[in-house]
Image 1 (cartoon, rainbow, N blue to C red):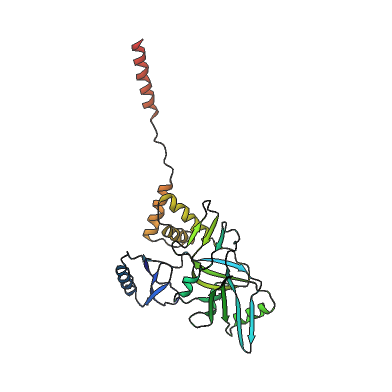
Image 2 (cartoon, rainbow, N blue to C red):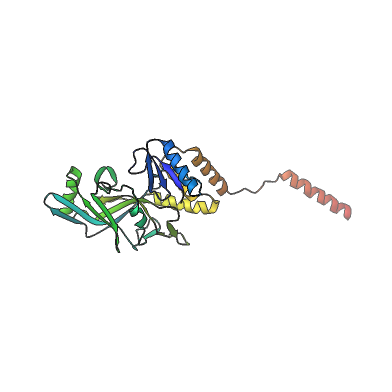
Length: 290
C-alpha cells in the first residue's frame, strides 16, 4: 500500500503522512518532515512513494433514512444513537445502484483517524468526535452504528428538539474509497463497496441531494479503462475541473492526454486534383492499349 502526504487530513493541523486508505501515519509541522517520513517508510517497505494528495477531492456522501434514531436523556446527558450506513441495501439511483458490504468499515474504524459528527455535513456544527470520546462508532450485522454524547450548544439543542418531535429520521456519512475498495458490475450499473475510508458522519435535518462526485468518479473509471490512465488521478482532475478549482500541471496534462486519446482520428484527406490526375493517367493507358 503506497504512502502519501497531505495538508488536509482530519486530526492533523499541519502536514500528514497517510496510507492509501487515508489512515494517518504521522502528523508534522512542515511539509518536508512529512515527505521525509513518506520516503523513509516507502523505501523500508520496498515501494515507490505516492507523492502529494489532496484527500478532500474525492469525498462522497450517502444518506440513509432510519426509522429508529434514538435520543436518550439521563439528567443533563443527552445520548444520540442511530445508523449512518446500512449493509446490503440498495441505494437510490446515483444514477448507478450501490451497496455497502458487511465489514466495509472495519479497517477505517481500527485506524487512528479522528472522525467527527456534524449537522448536515457542516464542519462548523460539530456534535461529537472520536478523539474526545464523545463519538463512538462500531459495525454490527446491520451497518455502521453511531452513538454520541451531545454537547450543550445551540444547534445540538435544536437537534434534540427535532428528535423529540420525531422530525429527524436520516443520517449520512462522508467517505472516500481506497484503491481496490469497490467493484463494478460489467454493465456499470451497480457498485459494491468492500472497503470505505470514513471521513465523517452527520445527522440530516433536511433533504440532501446526492453529490455529483459519485458520477464523476464513475466517469473517471470508464475513461481510465478506455485510455489506459490512472483512475484515481483522473478522478482528482475531473473533480477539480467541475468544482472550478485551479488545475496543477499534472492534472492539466493528464486531461489533455485523455482528450487526445479519446479524439476520433479523422481520415486523411486526399486532394481531388491528385485523384483526377491518377484517373486521367489510367484512361490514357487504356486508350493506348486499344
